[in-house]
Image (spheres, rainbow, N blue to C red):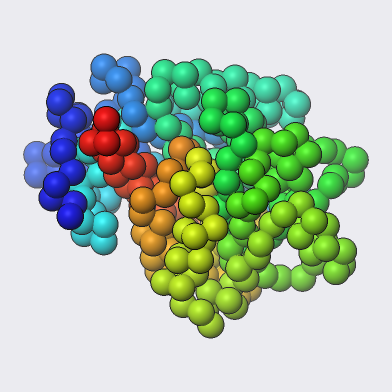
Length: 328
Ligand SMILES: [Mn+2]
């Protein structure tokens, strides 16, 4: 089926040819793709947000984006699991980092919303590399301004629908409560996947359910299996515009030690990648991958897992772009 996907009129510029320049040489753009200023038009922009002022425990996710880029040197141009060459279907390019204020969370949130909006207005979908989870709120605002309220698929050990920490409304544990309050999410299609670990109280779950979230726990993934979970998620999402937000702590600490608030009993990287592949066909309008904190990583375990998750998300986006082009 994928053989019939028509390539764009002008071939996108792909990654650096690794048979000519070794993978470990040269600048680490995501997947060794060109920068946005090296291409005429970007359809998927990979953009970093080096910000971790919103964390409640271990800091360090400000270094996550560049750790993921380094680990992404090993990504290759053909994706056999989805049977496509994602970077040939649409122009993917690295947009560098959004420069945000590390001392003022309110200003940082405004900057991310503004800069993300500029990229979206240029016609690009966003594959954002965090940064801590605070950044999901301004990204969702920017996306909802252009698409209306979006379906949300949120991979995370935690709910991230808490109200405040130490009186602060914008933190890495609160973005999705703010987003529901602001009316920028389609509350008929909100899901957490990979939830686990102790909570402050049962009320956390009651509040979360009232906001409209459905929960697929990490144990549910194990018991039901990835295909059934992906089918259920796809049915819930339908053809709504979809935003996917992945907190790398959705993975077990064995698969992602380099993160700020680890919880035992998480998904394997294989389970996460398979669920993402199972979302093929969804109208994925943008995505983020956050909370990679390389100072706690070992042998790039976390950054490699994150780079592969971003690769699958990018593939979903370029496939959808190609499908929409074919439908025109
Ligand atoms: Mn989170």
